[in-house]
Amino acid sequence: MPPITIAELLTDLSSLKACDPTDALAVVTIDPALLPPSLRPPTADDSDKLLSAAHELINLHVEISQRKGLAELAGSREAAEEIIRRVQDKV
Image (cartoon, rainbow, N blue to C red):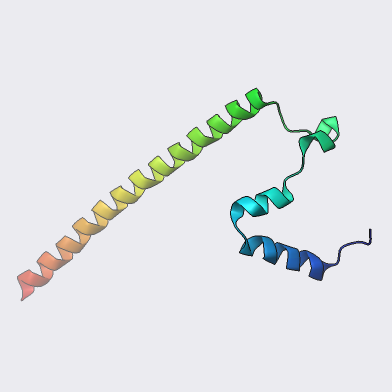
């Protein structure tokens, strides 16, 4: 099989980007049985634990980001209301 050119690679990547994510994943997913033992993914139990921990970490990050965003919005709203009060006092 001849080596792939950059143009062919970019074309393939564009095709993957244009198709359904599930279909794209099916195209690029490797059967773990074909990999050498050193490159095989962790067992299902380890993978589930790791995936669960990653999911919890992402949820925590989202929650903290939302709280920070809400606090910033509340502070911005108070600042805007203060500016409006000052303008109204001068008018």
